Image (tube, rainbow, N blue to C red; front, side):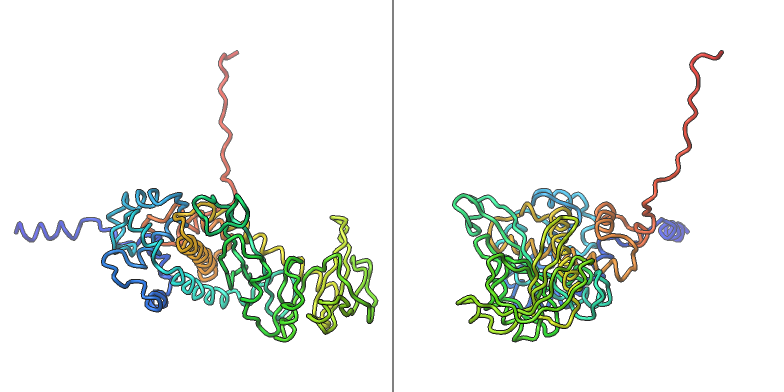
Length: 403
């Protein structure tokens, strides 16, 4: 009788069968594809306790919860030790182990896996609008610089007393998804990264005038890809034809030109399209170059205006991801952290689309940061969010002296 009563009490005890928000977030990650990336570079070779998956989870947790250092990551995760196994961790979390993993494990594991997530996100955002009615794929290519300490990061030296890391990013404007990211030291010039691009026929590439290299731009034409960039002031050319434009839209001219410089004419032997636009708000005159002769001239100017999305992307990741301070000083550790941060960015974009959330990526990231250890449905935290402040009844102030 006593045995039956104890069994009854056991089943009557409240049991929390829920999963943490962090473990639910991992459902959006293709773990099989991650293991293929690990096997490709033998990431778990000679590893006994702390696998590449554990390393990825630690760094992803640090990005989601804004951890500042390895000691910070260790303290936060060890404070939730009973939950770590159900969150996917199998190894013992230690700052020394994590630091060693960042130093020696190939960063290409996380770069390849980020490309897997990018492929998923691009399929989800394929029909997303970016402000210009265009069927073709449109990319913006630019770079941003993160300043580093020269004594700690000598491999990124680009000036006598300065060191930096550069993120060269090819951004798909539909959904602001980074399709290709190249992490280099500050000494690498931006235009050299054009050689790394795999050009997509029929796509548009938006670049500022820092990427004007006519030998490289001619490769776009040969690959049947289109570019839109700004012309430099010292451009030498002669006018072949000119088309009428609507000056009320800000357009000043739409021309077909040929380069006449000694070197530029050899490097780009075909015709170019030159469009001059006057921006009344900033009172500036902008000159655009393109190898596309079919789009309306105003559409060309609108395309270049959409290039600003890559600047907004750089600002977002610097403000909301851990990319200004690094957990390691080696080139491998920096690239590992950058690629995991980008994976988290793309993962949040995937969650937004698959859960059909009507909120910004910033709001989703903020909600995840405070609910990461809670054992509630992942949609519950988002459903409780509201931009409007609750109505508060005004308090009734009692008079001190009654008349």
